[in-house]
Each structure stands twice: as structure tokens, then as C-alpha cells.
Image (cartoon, rainbow over the protein chains, first blue to last red):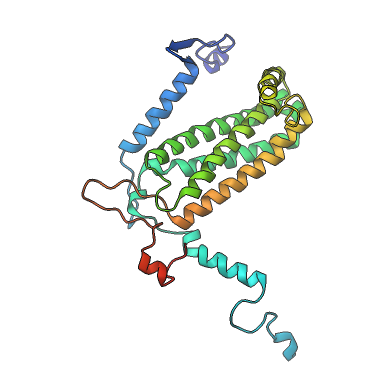
Length: 56
Length: 234
């Protein structure tokens, strides 16, 4: 039972998602989180130094 | 060995006369082996932002492999057994990662204006790959063989009927959607990705915009003098 609780999703996925409204924009919170992650990863990819290989 | 056995099977050396020799000479001239499988890249490629194209391909291959496994075993297995559920989830999450990496690749190449240096067709094939991916993922949701897929199909049919294509792309037809998902769209997507990759190899990876006053040599742009002398193919 404890392992099931540990493996379970931290939020209840069986209920409808919350939505945010911003003017004509309407987006669910899960999708907004994914878009935020996309932007974050792109910014990190641009800013973080790339490990240099030998002789390239 | 007789002289007839050792004789060359092709014609005499000179201009290619057969269509196979013509095709081979054109293919090698357009994409020589050192460009097809290079072992060095320009210095500007050493950046994380250039990694997302190959990550997209890796996720695509994982989706193909996991999809092959669940196609072999069938819905009773991938809905009802632990290992089947694992492969079902592997297929789902490889597709999630495929789209995640592809969107970052799209944004990065957009902000670099990656169509520069005669790379317009590369950009178009990438955009078509994105559209084919959307169709492949959509038909995948339709063939899950559960209530979720039925719900998606009954919702989607109204949208598709409203634009007039429901008669020949019928989302309620499980057989048609299954064939679209496991054959037609993956083959089209693989062909588009292959064409995209070949063009990336042919033109080279697009360089970043140079800093003010600086210049970055573009491997995809051939100098006019070099082009006249036939030093590089266009």
C-alpha cells in the first residue's frame, strides 16, 4: 500500500483539469505547465555551456 | 577462370550510359559519403540547442520500436498485462518526448531562420514532418481500443465532417484509422524525416546569426566562383 501511494500521481488525474483564462486565451493548467517547461528547456539549451570534445 | 568470366559486366569507362550509372553519379555528386556521414561538424554546432533534432529522431525510433511490439501482441496484452502496460506507456511517453523535442527544435530553428542559405526545402520538409506527426499521433489516440479512443473519435468526427473530409477520413472506422496509424502515416513520416535529414547533410547545419561586425561561414552557401568551376553541387 505504501509503495502504491509513493508511485501514485501527486495530483488526482481523474478529475477535469483547471483552466486559466487570459483574454481570448484559454488553456488548461497541465498544458500551460508543458509550455512553460518547453520555454525553460529552450532557454537552458541556449545558455548552458556545451561540453567540449577533444580536437573538434 | 576464362576471359569471359573476368570481363567487366558494365560498359567501357566514359560517360555513364545506363540509368543506374547516371543515378549513382548524380547521387554521389549531390551527397558524397563524407557529407552523408561526416565525422566533424563546424564549431558552432557545439551547443545544446543543436541537440534537439537528434533527440527527436531518437524518440521517433523508440516510438517505432515500442509500437511494433504492441502491434505484435495486440490490445488484450497491452491493456491487460503488466509488461503490456509497460510497453503501452513506453509508446505513449516516447511520443510525448518526440513532440517535446520537436517543438524545441522547431522554435530553435525558427529563431535561427534556418531556411537561410538555400535551406528552404529543408524547412518545408520539417514543417510537413510536424503535420504528419500530428496526424500519426491523432490516429494513435483513435486506435487505443478503449473508452478514451471512442470518446475522441465521436468528438473528432463532427470537426472533420464540418470541414468536408469525414467521408473519406472516417474517424469512426477503426480499420481505416488503424491502417493510417500503423502503415500510411508512419511510412510518410519516415520518408519526410529521411528527406529532411538528407537535406541537412547536403546543405550543412545552419550557422547562427553572426555578432555585429563578425561573419560565420555557411557550409550550405557556395561561392559563385566555386559553383562555376563545379567545385560543389547545388
